[in-house]
Image 1: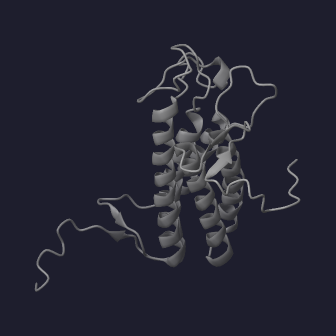
Image 2: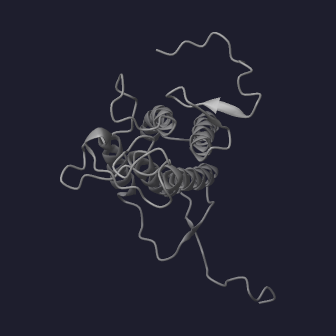
Image 3: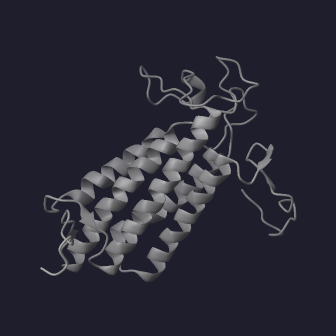
Length: 231
């Protein structure tokens, strides 16, 4: 349980902040950039839920996503420790599986696409496209953090293994200098990155779902369609 007794603390006035493991880092740390963008995305979902026409099933799914985005931010802000004093809050594979299930469910019945889509149609659809692009940005920033601090490898024989059971396999860049070749300390779990990737897919599908529900056609991209404005 989190207890918030005072919102301002003055501890960040020097341009530094604390991660979930209580270590101090710069506010420009790529991990902070990543979970800050996740927080921004979560707020934008709240704007959609408060102001746009969303059916009850989608609304219930988005409430779960909002809660999981808090979990995801906690995951990104907590450098991996192979021997933690207590189990940290991490994104788990079943949450990603649920996103994929929603993608399959909400795409059912939508017409096939013969071109890319321009964001628009109904107001709700346009907002979902905005969420999609915000999710992509958060995913890119999470990958940037992984390139700096290293990424926990996937155990191909057991994809649902916990981070402590996964093999060490840094991707791009270098893990912190204090870490040896087999030391995973400080690295980032791949599951938040996978979650964000699937979530952007879900928002694309929900944008189309919103247009179908409103009886509005998707706006298709016409490559080079405005090259001759006088025609």
